[in-house]
Length: 359
Image 1 (cartoon, helix red, strand yellow):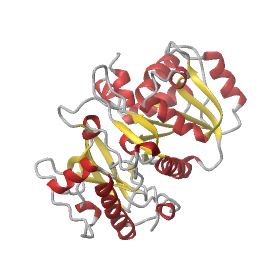
Image 2 (cartoon, rainbow, N blue to C red):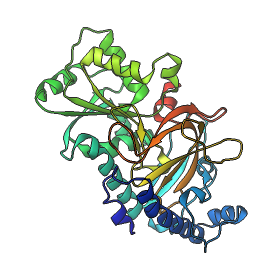
Image 3 (cartoon, rainbow, N blue to C red):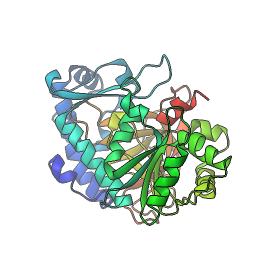
């Protein structure tokens, strides 16, 4: 299948057999493409015995450690075709990943994100509340994965309002006016987990401001490290938000700049789901064999999107647990899983986690 055909598939409609039949040949061909056009990738594949003539199941394709994108500039298209360079979040002095996009890869990322998010919030653009400061978009010195995340999700917003000012304080009057103006409509909210907790929830909790966001849906991501240290679990996070603004539709997501566009959304039952365009594999740390359901291991992520750079099969620095496949109570097909934290000695990297280091 061509990439355009794959991206037209409803995100959670493929069972295990159908998904393997589509993704295995496509990802094998993608490995061949990067082998041909990216010299460092070819050298790494030669070192692990990659056979360009072999038809692989995608679970058997060689993967790259995600940290390599902090160490090398990896791309598989001519430099004059690169239209955008994405940079990961990082704390001061920390190396960042650089991801090189051509026009086709960037367009595929946008289409994929649209397919996934629309299946949760609908196809109509909604009034959008962004739990961040507009300065993150205006100041290109600040622009990285955080700004890119906001811009990426902004395509789902009609009227956009930033809930925080440049001092990261609540824009009280704008917030109240926005919620009053759209009290009869569904509102889309987006932000990074720690920032929502620190600057939105805490400010509302210690003030007398009462907001009614019972008609809103929040999508958030970007790391839990700081919140877990404060004993704020996902359930506690959702309850606290409901307490201060009656918000009851909250979806976390897992994603990374190295595979922008491919995100793993949290369903109504608190499970992260792999869409039709990508997959997750949990691997044992001692030999990288595939872990059983319920067994903690290292998360590998695969995606059909990265054509301009060899990021289609990556071993992350996150631990996770596969919960099941094709049988989640929410009705979505595909694998569903949970995050079990960062690997020991892995760098802090999420948009929320790197920002949280200031606190």
